[in-house]
Image 1 (cartoon, rainbow, N blue to C red):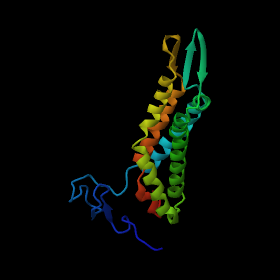
Image 2 (cartoon, helix red, strand yellow):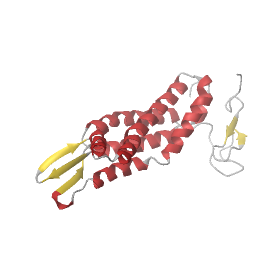
Image 3 (cartoon, one colour):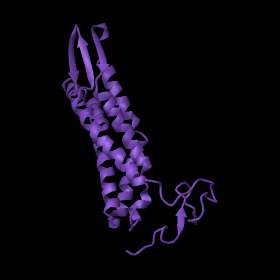
Image 4 (cartoon, rainbow, N blue to C red):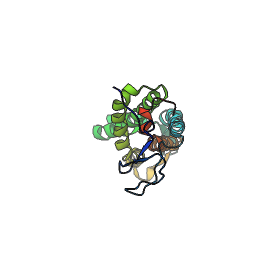
Length: 201
């Protein structure tokens, strides 16, 4: 399919209202939003945030998410240990929510972000339409991303056993928070218009 991008036509598309303006304009004449042909350093920012997320995803899943102290005995548990705990107690619904929100969703978002970066870097414009669909999906999920942290907090609170047990967040908690925040920033910094560009970003 042959097509011309806004850059080739010396035009700018407003990402807020969809209005088309001359590339010389800085403000949309329809909604008064600031417009630019491409987000500055979009690829580099998205790649950086994604890389940080991938790095922190490892300690988020390997290190203890919570430390349970019962009668002086400390027991540390990872996210996966928490899932197994709820399965053992037949709380299958909670186990499923934690597995989806804390493991499946972050990994899925990172896989999509890596795929989008691949398409842009190698100029695979034939995959642009599919890539847009994937981006819209993780962008929608991103609106609910903070629920991942809420689920982890719920997992810590729900296993409290009165005064006999003290539960504190483990080192995986801040790492997991970094993963969630970085994926949100990566999604918001990505410029989907790059998917259609045939020249260097």
